[in-house]
Length: 188
Image 1 (cartoon, rainbow, N blue to C red):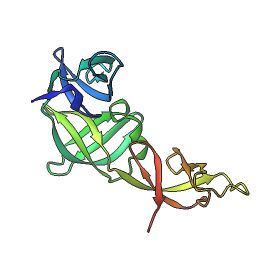
Image 2 (image 1 turned 120 degrees about the vertical axis):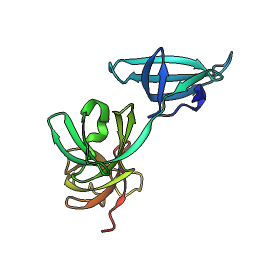
Image 3 (image 1 turned 180 degrees about the horizontal axis):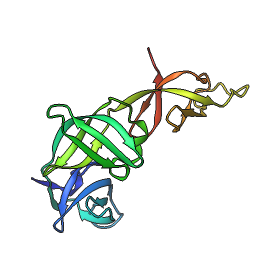
Image 4 (image 1 turned 60 degrees about the vertical axis):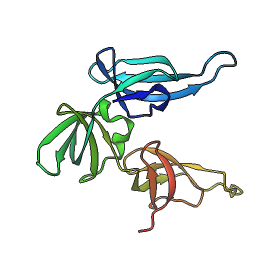
């Protein structure tokens, strides 16, 4: 399927120069002079190399045919993560490099969507949010009550997030998996 370069989004897989590339970033730039361009950072799925390329906004690229399947996270062994297909019970293993920084938010039994191409896993899409426990939080500084002030906190998985001053150790919070940001206190 052909798509315009200015419609590329993070996570899309395209065929370029006879290779599969995953879009990492896409920024539309309009210089003062000349036509607008799409500045795209892509990663070669097989080789892992990154490439920064400019497309004219009217350029057309081939989007790879990707199927999404539901998998359940089973366990991690070093930098390898094992998932099981919920329908066929087939297991696949993916490296941390393919999953990215979101790997820190994988929890036992979590249902994820794996993007597959020709039976090979390309990437994993985690749920948009996860609920986690804060194990360590800096104490509140007196006078730091403005709503825009945040303090660092450490989650049970070791990740660090910025939280409002009223959030303390032992509190369960909802975290956005895409960028590891605090959303709200958990309602459970």
